[in-house]
Image (cartoon, rainbow, N blue to C red; front, side):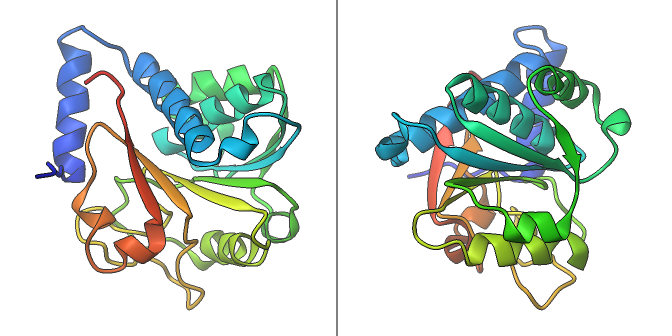
Amino acid sequence: MTELLTAAQMRSLETAAMETGPVTGQELMERAGAGVVAALLAHWPELRAGSFRALVLCGPGNNGGDGFVIARLLHQAGWTVTLHLFGDPDRLPPDAALNCSRWQALGEVRPWDGEAIAGARADLVVDAVFGAGLTRPVPHEIVSPMVIGMGHRGRSCRKLAVDSPTGLCMDSGRVLVDSEAGLPNADLTVTFHRARPGHYLASGPAACGAVVVADIGL
């Protein structure tokens, strides 16, 4: 039997771990990013060797912080990485802000540009915009270019979601988007510690693709 955790339960676990001292938020974020990279290379072993292009889409919270770690690790592995951020870099949470600055030492943080995102060419698209904590509908201007870009790149482009495809409620599997475009469906979703109900309920299975749970030491 698989144990599932709601977003609130997972948040409580992380908070308890950080408050009692065994781990910091920065360490959890680093483990999460490393877990995603390990999972994607296991899922797509053909990406282990060679020069590839990644489009990393980051949001304004800690899901985006995971995206900065992923971008840095892919860059260090020899990938060409293009990163877009929805939000203001100066208003990121502390752990995400630290990883943003670490990425900026290697590459550019580009502002959200729907046209560029929809038309970008990449071997891998990483959706690290909004994760398991999402409770409100995602605006059209965020979702639509992601759906267009992630849906029309051909089979050679792999689509990966960090924790959750943007716009999917992880407690219910409901679609939370203000757009007829639907969700930016993933081929692979990597979540942490335990899966959530939304990975398996309602629209979850179609949106998430294969679900991998990465161990981050909780």
